[in-house]
Image 1: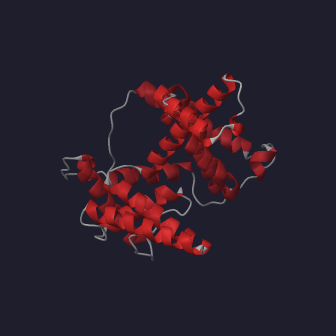
Image 2 (image 1 turned 90 degrees about the vertical axis):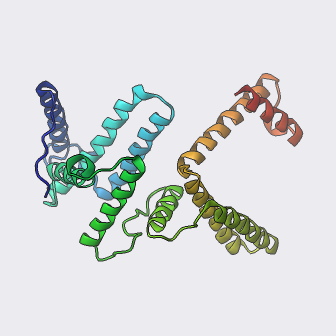
Image 3 (image 1 turned 120 degrees about the vertical axis):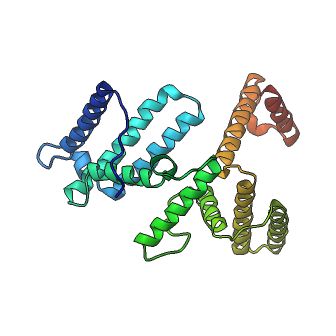
Length: 276
Protein backbone atom coordinates (compact mmCIF):
# COMPACT_ATOMS: atom_id res chain seq x y z
CA UNK A 1 0.00 0.00 0.00
CA UNK A 2 1.57 3.31 -1.06
CA UNK A 3 2.08 6.09 1.40
CA UNK A 4 -0.57 8.79 1.67
CA UNK A 5 -0.19 11.43 -1.02
CA UNK A 6 -0.85 15.02 -0.06
CA UNK A 7 -2.36 17.06 -2.91
CA UNK A 8 -3.05 20.74 -2.48
CA UNK A 9 -6.67 21.72 -3.05
CA UNK A 10 -8.69 24.75 -2.11
CA UNK A 11 -10.78 23.83 0.95
CA UNK A 12 -13.95 25.39 -0.44
CA UNK A 13 -13.53 23.28 -3.58
CA UNK A 14 -12.93 20.17 -1.47
CA UNK A 15 -16.02 20.82 0.63
CA UNK A 16 -18.05 21.28 -2.54
CA UNK A 17 -16.69 18.05 -4.03
CA UNK A 18 -17.40 16.14 -0.84
CA UNK A 19 -20.93 17.52 -0.56
CA UNK A 20 -21.84 16.89 -4.20
CA UNK A 21 -20.49 13.35 -4.26
CA UNK A 22 -21.99 12.49 -0.88
CA UNK A 23 -25.39 13.72 -2.02
CA UNK A 24 -25.22 11.56 -5.16
CA UNK A 25 -24.36 8.49 -3.07
CA UNK A 26 -27.23 9.25 -0.69
CA UNK A 27 -29.67 9.73 -3.59
CA UNK A 28 -28.71 6.34 -5.01
CA UNK A 29 -29.11 4.69 -1.61
CA UNK A 30 -32.57 6.25 -1.30
CA UNK A 31 -33.58 4.98 -4.73
CA UNK A 32 -32.54 1.47 -3.69
CA UNK A 33 -34.22 1.60 -0.28
CA UNK A 34 -36.14 -1.72 0.05
CA UNK A 35 -39.20 -0.03 1.57
CA UNK A 36 -39.33 3.48 0.11
CA UNK A 37 -37.17 3.17 -2.98
CA UNK A 38 -38.00 3.43 -6.69
CA UNK A 39 -39.58 0.23 -8.09
CA UNK A 40 -37.53 0.45 -11.28
CA UNK A 41 -34.21 0.99 -9.50
CA UNK A 42 -34.96 -1.82 -7.03
CA UNK A 43 -35.64 -4.21 -9.88
CA UNK A 44 -32.19 -3.75 -11.40
CA UNK A 45 -29.04 -5.84 -10.94
CA UNK A 46 -25.51 -5.71 -12.32
CA UNK A 47 -26.43 -7.38 -15.60
CA UNK A 48 -29.45 -5.20 -16.33
CA UNK A 49 -27.53 -2.01 -15.55
CA UNK A 50 -24.39 -2.94 -17.53
CA UNK A 51 -25.89 -1.98 -20.93
CA UNK A 52 -26.78 1.47 -19.57
CA UNK A 53 -23.22 1.86 -18.30
CA UNK A 54 -21.86 1.13 -21.77
CA UNK A 55 -24.39 3.47 -23.35
CA UNK A 56 -23.45 6.34 -21.04
CA UNK A 57 -19.74 5.81 -21.75
CA UNK A 58 -20.45 6.02 -25.47
CA UNK A 59 -22.48 9.19 -24.97
CA UNK A 60 -19.53 10.79 -23.19
CA UNK A 61 -17.30 9.87 -26.14
CA UNK A 62 -19.95 11.15 -28.57
CA UNK A 63 -20.14 14.57 -26.87
CA UNK A 64 -16.36 14.87 -27.15
CA UNK A 65 -16.35 13.66 -30.76
CA UNK A 66 -19.01 16.23 -31.70
CA UNK A 67 -17.05 18.89 -29.81
CA UNK A 68 -20.23 19.63 -27.87
CA UNK A 69 -18.40 20.21 -24.62
CA UNK A 70 -21.37 21.99 -23.04
CA UNK A 71 -23.06 18.55 -23.12
CA UNK A 72 -20.04 16.83 -21.58
CA UNK A 73 -20.80 17.85 -18.00
CA UNK A 74 -24.22 16.21 -18.10
CA UNK A 75 -22.94 13.09 -19.84
CA UNK A 76 -20.16 12.67 -17.27
CA UNK A 77 -22.78 12.96 -14.54
CA UNK A 78 -24.82 10.22 -16.18
CA UNK A 79 -21.74 8.01 -16.32
CA UNK A 80 -20.85 8.76 -12.70
CA UNK A 81 -24.35 7.73 -11.69
CA UNK A 82 -23.73 4.33 -13.26
CA UNK A 83 -20.62 3.84 -11.13
CA UNK A 84 -22.47 4.82 -7.97
CA UNK A 85 -25.37 2.53 -8.97
CA UNK A 86 -23.07 -0.50 -9.29
CA UNK A 87 -21.30 0.35 -6.04
CA UNK A 88 -24.61 0.67 -4.21
CA UNK A 89 -25.75 -2.76 -5.39
CA UNK A 90 -22.39 -4.23 -4.36
CA UNK A 91 -22.69 -2.59 -0.94
CA UNK A 92 -26.10 -4.21 -0.44
CA UNK A 93 -24.46 -7.61 -1.00
CA UNK A 94 -21.55 -6.76 1.32
CA UNK A 95 -19.10 -7.02 -1.60
CA UNK A 96 -17.66 -3.50 -1.57
CA UNK A 97 -18.87 0.09 -1.44
CA UNK A 98 -18.17 3.35 -3.26
CA UNK A 99 -15.40 4.21 -0.81
CA UNK A 100 -13.60 0.97 -1.70
CA UNK A 101 -13.98 1.85 -5.38
CA UNK A 102 -12.38 5.25 -4.79
CA UNK A 103 -9.61 3.85 -2.61
CA UNK A 104 -8.89 1.14 -5.17
CA UNK A 105 -8.48 3.55 -8.08
CA UNK A 106 -6.45 5.96 -5.91
CA UNK A 107 -4.02 3.19 -5.02
CA UNK A 108 -3.84 2.04 -8.63
CA UNK A 109 -3.15 5.52 -10.04
CA UNK A 110 -0.38 6.15 -7.50
CA UNK A 111 1.19 2.75 -8.22
CA UNK A 112 1.03 3.25 -12.00
CA UNK A 113 2.60 6.73 -11.88
CA UNK A 114 5.95 6.12 -10.16
CA UNK A 115 7.39 9.07 -12.10
CA UNK A 116 4.99 11.33 -10.19
CA UNK A 117 4.59 9.69 -6.80
CA UNK A 118 7.96 7.91 -6.49
CA UNK A 119 11.54 8.40 -7.66
CA UNK A 120 11.37 7.04 -11.20
CA UNK A 121 12.15 9.32 -14.12
CA UNK A 122 10.15 9.00 -17.34
CA UNK A 123 10.76 11.66 -19.97
CA UNK A 124 8.19 11.02 -22.70
CA UNK A 125 4.57 9.94 -23.08
CA UNK A 126 5.83 6.78 -24.80
CA UNK A 127 8.01 5.97 -21.77
CA UNK A 128 5.02 6.46 -19.48
CA UNK A 129 2.82 4.20 -21.64
CA UNK A 130 5.46 1.47 -21.71
CA UNK A 131 5.96 1.62 -17.92
CA UNK A 132 2.17 1.57 -17.43
CA UNK A 133 1.97 -1.67 -19.41
CA UNK A 134 4.81 -3.20 -17.39
CA UNK A 135 3.09 -2.37 -14.10
CA UNK A 136 -0.22 -3.76 -15.35
CA UNK A 137 1.55 -6.97 -16.39
CA UNK A 138 3.02 -7.26 -12.88
CA UNK A 139 -0.44 -6.75 -11.39
CA UNK A 140 -1.92 -9.48 -13.58
CA UNK A 141 0.78 -11.89 -12.48
CA UNK A 142 0.15 -11.13 -8.82
CA UNK A 143 -3.62 -11.54 -8.73
CA UNK A 144 -4.63 -13.89 -11.53
CA UNK A 145 -4.22 -17.59 -12.22
CA UNK A 146 -4.30 -16.71 -15.91
CA UNK A 147 -0.88 -15.15 -16.49
CA UNK A 148 -1.31 -14.69 -20.23
CA UNK A 149 -0.37 -11.29 -21.64
CA UNK A 150 -3.92 -11.25 -23.02
CA UNK A 151 -5.56 -11.78 -19.65
CA UNK A 152 -8.43 -9.42 -18.73
CA UNK A 153 -8.93 -7.84 -22.16
CA UNK A 154 -12.69 -7.35 -21.89
CA UNK A 155 -14.74 -9.36 -24.38
CA UNK A 156 -17.43 -6.66 -24.39
CA UNK A 157 -15.13 -4.03 -25.90
CA UNK A 158 -16.03 -2.92 -29.43
CA UNK A 159 -14.44 -5.37 -31.87
CA UNK A 160 -11.93 -2.93 -33.33
CA UNK A 161 -10.90 -1.62 -29.92
CA UNK A 162 -10.48 -5.16 -28.54
CA UNK A 163 -8.44 -6.25 -31.57
CA UNK A 164 -6.13 -3.27 -31.20
CA UNK A 165 -5.70 -3.85 -27.48
CA UNK A 166 -4.92 -7.55 -27.95
CA UNK A 167 -2.41 -6.73 -30.70
CA UNK A 168 -0.79 -4.13 -28.46
CA UNK A 169 -0.47 -6.66 -25.63
CA UNK A 170 1.04 -9.25 -27.99
CA UNK A 171 3.46 -6.67 -29.40
CA UNK A 172 4.57 -5.72 -25.90
CA UNK A 173 5.44 -9.40 -25.38
CA UNK A 174 7.57 -9.30 -28.53
CA UNK A 175 5.11 -10.86 -30.99
CA UNK A 176 4.95 -8.18 -33.69
CA UNK A 177 6.14 -7.31 -37.17
CA UNK A 178 9.63 -5.76 -37.07
CA UNK A 179 8.42 -2.96 -39.32
CA UNK A 180 5.31 -1.81 -41.17
CA UNK A 181 6.38 -3.41 -44.45
CA UNK A 182 5.39 -6.82 -43.10
CA UNK A 183 1.91 -5.51 -42.32
CA UNK A 184 1.45 -4.15 -45.85
CA UNK A 185 2.44 -7.55 -47.24
CA UNK A 186 0.05 -9.32 -44.84
CA UNK A 187 -2.77 -6.99 -45.91
CA UNK A 188 -2.22 -7.89 -49.58
CA UNK A 189 -2.11 -11.59 -48.64
CA UNK A 190 -5.40 -11.40 -46.76
CA UNK A 191 -7.07 -9.58 -49.66
CA UNK A 192 -5.97 -12.33 -52.05
CA UNK A 193 -7.25 -15.06 -49.72
CA UNK A 194 -10.61 -13.33 -49.33
CA UNK A 195 -10.99 -13.00 -53.09
CA UNK A 196 -10.22 -16.71 -53.51
CA UNK A 197 -12.90 -17.75 -51.00
CA UNK A 198 -15.36 -15.34 -52.60
CA UNK A 199 -14.81 -17.01 -55.96
CA UNK A 200 -15.31 -20.44 -54.34
CA UNK A 201 -18.55 -19.15 -52.72
CA UNK A 202 -17.74 -20.70 -49.35
CA UNK A 203 -19.66 -18.39 -46.98
CA UNK A 204 -18.05 -19.66 -43.78
CA UNK A 205 -14.56 -19.24 -45.19
CA UNK A 206 -15.51 -15.83 -46.59
CA UNK A 207 -16.46 -14.69 -43.08
CA UNK A 208 -13.21 -16.04 -41.65
CA UNK A 209 -11.09 -14.35 -44.30
CA UNK A 210 -13.06 -11.12 -43.92
CA UNK A 211 -12.27 -11.24 -40.21
CA UNK A 212 -8.58 -11.82 -40.94
CA UNK A 213 -8.58 -8.85 -43.30
CA UNK A 214 -10.20 -6.58 -40.74
CA UNK A 215 -7.80 -7.79 -38.05
CA UNK A 216 -4.88 -6.95 -40.32
CA UNK A 217 -6.36 -3.49 -41.01
CA UNK A 218 -6.40 -2.92 -37.25
CA UNK A 219 -2.76 -4.04 -37.10
CA UNK A 220 -1.92 -1.56 -39.85
CA UNK A 221 -3.72 1.19 -37.93
CA UNK A 222 -1.65 0.39 -34.85
CA UNK A 223 1.61 0.60 -36.79
CA UNK A 224 0.46 3.91 -38.30
CA UNK A 225 -0.32 5.13 -34.75
CA UNK A 226 -4.01 5.51 -35.64
CA UNK A 227 -6.81 4.45 -33.32
CA UNK A 228 -8.82 2.05 -35.49
CA UNK A 229 -12.07 2.59 -33.59
CA UNK A 230 -11.86 6.38 -33.85
CA UNK A 231 -10.82 6.23 -37.50
CA UNK A 232 -13.79 4.07 -38.49
CA UNK A 233 -16.19 6.15 -36.40
CA UNK A 234 -15.05 9.34 -38.13
CA UNK A 235 -15.18 7.70 -41.55
CA UNK A 236 -18.75 6.58 -40.82
CA UNK A 237 -19.63 10.10 -39.72
CA UNK A 238 -18.20 11.56 -42.94
CA UNK A 239 -20.21 9.06 -44.97
CA UNK A 240 -23.38 9.93 -43.07
CA UNK A 241 -22.90 13.67 -43.62
CA UNK A 242 -22.21 13.19 -47.34
CA UNK A 243 -25.15 10.81 -47.79
CA UNK A 244 -27.51 13.21 -46.04
CA UNK A 245 -26.25 16.00 -48.31
CA UNK A 246 -26.97 13.79 -51.33
CA UNK A 247 -30.52 13.19 -50.11
CA UNK A 248 -31.01 16.90 -49.52
CA UNK A 249 -29.82 17.84 -53.02
CA UNK A 250 -32.05 15.17 -54.49
CA UNK A 251 -35.09 16.46 -52.60
CA UNK A 252 -34.37 20.04 -53.60
CA UNK A 253 -34.27 18.93 -57.24
CA UNK A 254 -37.66 17.25 -56.87
CA UNK A 255 -36.19 13.79 -57.47
CA UNK A 256 -36.71 10.47 -55.72
CA UNK A 257 -33.38 9.23 -54.42
CA UNK A 258 -34.12 5.55 -54.96
CA UNK A 259 -34.93 6.22 -58.62
CA UNK A 260 -31.51 7.70 -59.44
CA UNK A 261 -29.09 5.57 -61.43
CA UNK A 262 -25.51 4.90 -60.37
CA UNK A 263 -24.06 7.73 -62.45
CA UNK A 264 -26.48 10.29 -61.00
CA UNK A 265 -25.72 9.15 -57.47
CA UNK A 266 -22.00 9.45 -58.17
CA UNK A 267 -22.48 13.06 -59.27
CA UNK A 268 -24.32 13.84 -56.03
CA UNK A 269 -21.62 12.07 -54.03
CA UNK A 270 -18.83 14.09 -55.61
CA UNK A 271 -20.80 17.31 -55.07
CA UNK A 272 -21.24 16.43 -51.41
CA UNK A 273 -17.51 15.80 -51.03
CA UNK A 274 -16.71 19.07 -52.77
CA UNK A 275 -19.03 21.01 -50.46
CA UNK A 276 -17.04 19.86 -47.42
